[in-house]
Amino acid sequence: MRILILGGDGMLGHQLLCSWQERHEVAVTLRRPLQTYSEYGIFTRENSYDAIDARELGRLHEVLRDFQPEVVVNAVGIVKQRDEAHAAIPSIEVNALLPHRLHAACAELGVRLVHLSTDCVFSGDKGGYREGDLEDARDLYGRSKLLGELRQAPAITLRTSIIGLELSRKKSLIEWFLAQHGRIQGYRRAIYSGFTTIEMARIIERILTRHADMYGLWHVASQPISKYDLLLQLAHLLHKDIEIVADDSFVCDRSLDASRFNAHTGYRPPTWDVMLAELAEQVRERKA
Image (tube, rainbow, N blue to C red; front, side, top):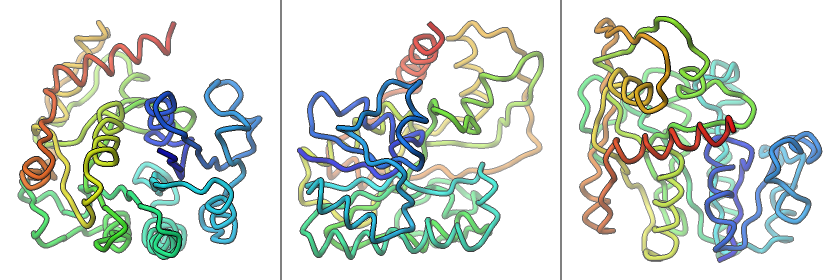
């Protein structure tokens, strides 16, 4: 399968490339010139379109015509941890408008589109959210991502959340945790139902190879876990010398109900024991 990944240098995008490149013809778009990624050893002139600003629709059309993918995966997004997440114009351009422009381009070319949304379209006041629940995000990030969701063929929108290793920005939960020492707080009432990027790569590949009929909006979720327990378990697996103190002051449950997705696909999420063991091994390999 010919797959184009937009945002190949992001936390999810580079993992998709690494996971799929031996079984599929995969190309990625990169924000910066190719030579600035040389230290990572995964991007080449053959698998990359470099210096691509996703907001420049003309350049994206050129890439689509040149690579002629069967599938486009939109892994581009301005996430909460970035400074731009507080700026309306880039957030709206990338999170809200870009997906619809991609949808129009892909529909014209007969290309399937996979778009990644987020559990942050919900406030986190109740948890166990289903696809039909009212989206009540109160911040710019959640609202901009909601506006970017696609519900018509040939697009499929996956509402989910991911943790994993990054290449350069290193502002995500796991990268923050790996950089900590001594004593930190762990939110015991912050409930999470996402996946590692390793498992998310498997989920998307499963959809692409087994479920050509799927389009519209789907919740994809794991067994809910608190951020405190997640970090405690990862610290144990990594033998990390750190004290994680339970903090109940922050309350947020954005867990998703993925029963509809699981019933349709037959997918059963792995346990956090399994996913975090894989992530810990990935951390050790990066250090080696």
